[in-house]
Amino acid sequence: MKPLQKLSAEWIEAKNAEKEAIEKRRLIEDEIVRILEIQDTDERSRRLEALDKEAKNLYVVKVTCRINRKVDGDLAQEIAAENGLEGYLTLLFRWKPELSMSAWDAVGDNVKQLFSRAITATPGRPSFNITMENSNG
Image 1 (tube, one colour):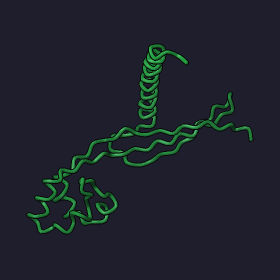
Image 2 (cartoon, helix red, strand yellow; image 1 turned 45 degrees about the vertical axis):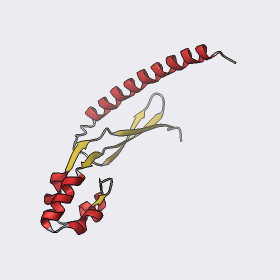
Image 3 (cartoon, one colour; image 1 turned 90 degrees about the horizontal axis):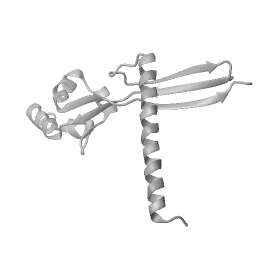
Image 4 (tube, helix red, strand yellow; image 1 turned 180 degrees about the horizontal axis):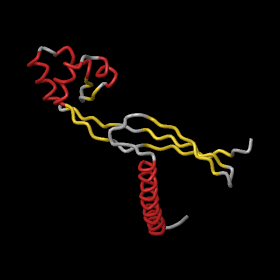
């Protein structure tokens, strides 16, 4: 069994390597975002394939873009009370409050316009899943 100080040193070394690997992966992801001309406002998934003819590998790239939305619960409740829309609070928001996108998409623009002051939307980081498949079929 290794002594604690040796395990501690190895853990720190591994953690530093992990941090460097994450930084390198994110730089690669950022370059893929630039190549694919993904905008901060995109909220969809894209699937692309890239064939390496020499190695006969097919890379399947799936990029999922999200918009992170935060809700000011106090402001949403205030808007609802001012406009007689209290019934929409439990329909549109989860009370921590979180936005229910399916319900939000289903209501009229007049309701969305009123509640939109209570919502802050910021782009999320795209997530990636890249696999390699041998194209020798």
